[in-house]
Length: 105
Image: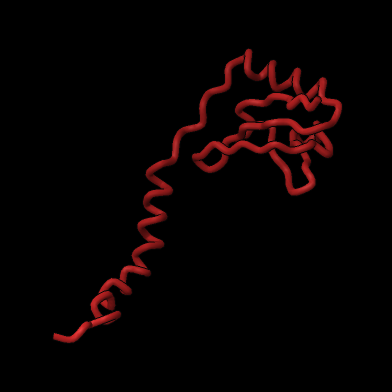
């Protein structure tokens, strides 16, 4: 009996095309709805942004069905367009779910 080597796994190479489809299905299945923001939470976010004086800040935000957390320094707060501007991008106020200042000693 001879060893088949890689020939044994050759039929599974056709699953490469299916892998992207399966990954996309998992991504869509795990999405969650955006939570409704309470008045208290909106006031907390407003207070944190009003009192922001520089330094890193921890922001939890919602995008495309998922929650993300970033720890960055805000470069500018654009009140007209309701966006936070970072060195790497922008974030709409409506996407913010929670915010807290990071204190460094």
